[in-house]
Amino acid sequence: MTAQALQTLIRTRIPLANFLQLRVQALEPDRAVVGAALEPNRNGHGALFAALPARA
Image (cartoon, rainbow, N blue to C red; front, top):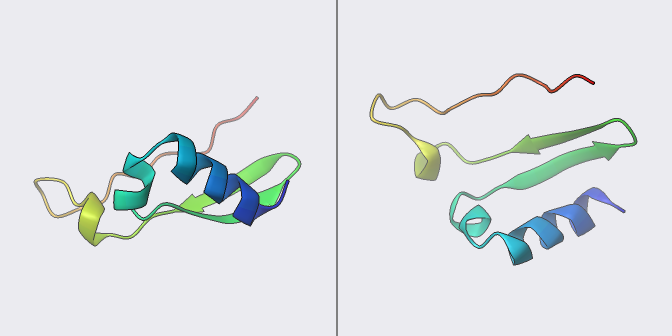
């Protein structure tokens, strides 16, 4: 699967991902790099939520 294919799958199955402007920037066998636009994802403090990478 390519990064574009995964992005399409996510945006098809999770409609909110379109509004959040989610992007799959890179896809490798052991990780995916996902980004999103700041404006539709701002919280009450004007910041974007960030998560740490998951480790197995």
